[in-house]
Amino acid sequence: MILASASPRRRELLEQAGLVLEICPADIDETRLAHESPTSLVERLAIGKARTAYRDRGIYAPHKALLAADTIVWTGDDVLGKPRDEQDARRMLQELSNRTHHVSTGVCIITQDDQGTPQERSFVETTAVTFLPLSNDQIKAYVASGEPLDKAGAYGIQGGAGAFVSGLSGDYNNVVGLPVDRVMRELDALGICE
Image 1 (cartoon, rainbow, N blue to C red):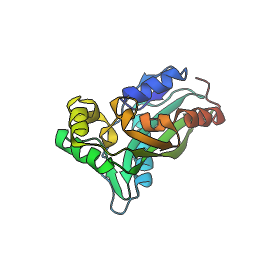
Image 2 (cartoon, rainbow, N blue to C red; image 1 turned 90 degrees about the vertical axis):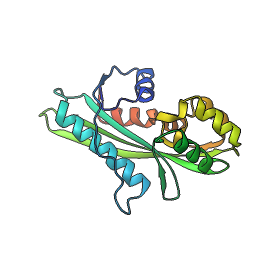
Image 3 (cartoon, helix red, strand yellow; image 1 turned 60 degrees about the horizontal axis):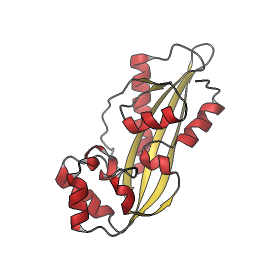
Image 4 (cartoon, rainbow, N blue to C red; image 1 turned 60 degrees about the vertical axis):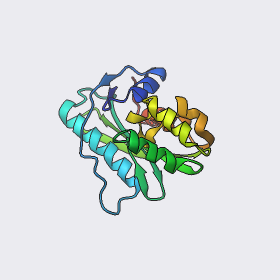
């Protein structure tokens, strides 16, 4: 499978599921459109990354797949991407403290039929996550660890921020970066044998 993402978390999750990957990241403009909902945004980004990687790389074999994904953290209409710096990470964690937020991952899978015609399937998986109240000292120490600086919403549930979580409704792996169970079901439905 071609993974159109440089995310080490997505790579690890797919490899744990038994897939052999070729990494081919795709860079696109991730600017949110006016009046675009968080879930529409994340699906559009996944589709854009998949189409860019397909255009640049192709698949070249039926029953193979190219997968792209994008993950965002959001509350209401406020989308939290990766923090710009430590101050931005602290702001995000203060915003998430003592409240429920959503983590949405948009996924797009492109395959080819026997005639080489591309087929595209996309979806969004959303998980609700509730954080405990966080003290300024907790936030400061976590940000100082460096862990939140490359993660949407400024935290990694699989790392130190796992201790911040008081509740989760949905797919845990989705919060890590990819809803693997859903991806595997989609690949199976598409007849992908990788």
